[in-house]
Length: 113
Length: 109
Image (cartoon, rainbow over all chains, first blue to last red; front, side, top):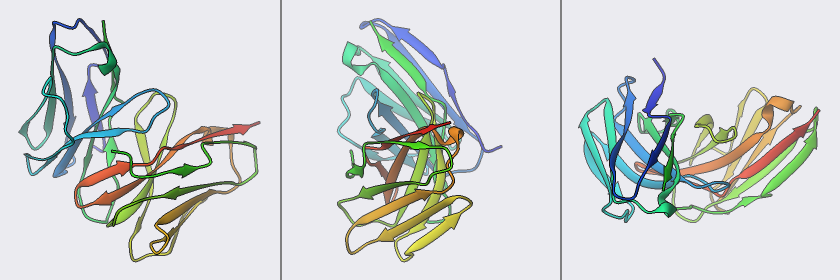
């Protein structure tokens, strides 16, 4: 299984809502990532977990809260988002080292209304 | 956190032609990777070149890396309509994977 599965594919939420994005991989990868991508822009790194511990937080606002319950799962909890947070949210995983690149999920298209 | 620039921003070529795009980066790296993204979907890893390598091939792809100039190039030979996509370079420093601005390639039939 060489897939990274993200759910849901699409999400519309109000600014007062609380929602969660989910990501799952079963490749035994030790690093998992959240990226945010706006239209016609490159993916922008948000968080990195390595060995289930948060290792990088790219100064992301606290309305985004990551969680890594185990080595296969990564969540992104959303609360009190703004319309400018609307974007494609991508999850990725990698083994680390110089052997292979990262595997990406298909993303969650988030719209904040 | 965007690592650097990609050049050109957009490229339109005829099927069968070669496509070349360049990437510059700013910081030290463990390796440099290239990814493809079809419209609004997830990224697909194409090729990885380590910091001690200068050139690498994979099928119709050829990647070069010049660490003294902090730059890399991706060549796609004999392009096909299916190669129409955005291409991103990404640099890896420890666990941090940072993407360049990307090149949008359109292959005309």
